[in-house]
Amino acid sequence: VGFECFDWERTVMVSSAIGAMEAQLRGCVEYVKQRRAFGKAIAEFEMIQDKLARMRVNINTARWALYHAAWLKQEGLPHQQEASIAKYHVAEVAMQNALEAVQIFGGYGYIKEFPVERSIRDAKLASIGGGTSEIQKIIIARTLLGE
Image 1 (cartoon, helix red, strand yellow):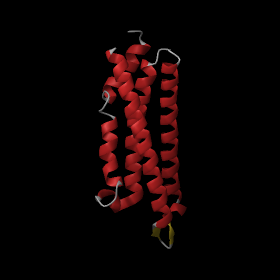
Image 2 (cartoon, rainbow, N blue to C red):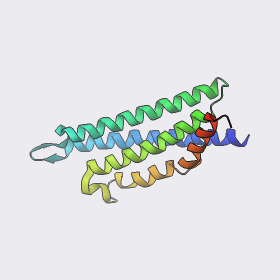
Image 3 (cartoon, rainbow, N blue to C red):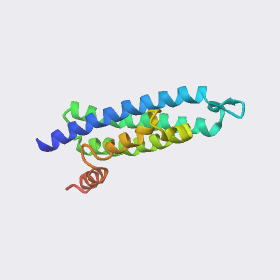
Image 4 (tube, rainbow, N blue to C red):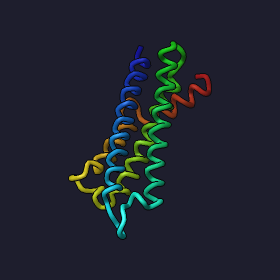
């Protein structure tokens, strides 16, 4: 029963982090369309487009990992490893996306007037709550080893 509760907690944490990443990406898209440098919107710069694309890929792969773990649970199939994979992956990409967002916002990414400043703290929580990333890797490895 205890591990089932952890699997549920991981699912909730993952869902929240994915929602936060979606909101963060929307904020970044809005910002890059408005922010101008060298006479044009920074959305036109390829490096900015690369960051936005990576953020979208991270969000989608995180969502798919969550959906897969949830589907296995719904079907009554073993899902502990997939729940840990989803939790670990989301924690990793949440931090990657937070760092990309801060880069996109530049100096504004560090001041409290912009919500992106908080995203790194929120992303770190994803790697702690519901079991640390290190615990998730142990669960994944032990499942692979049949322990």
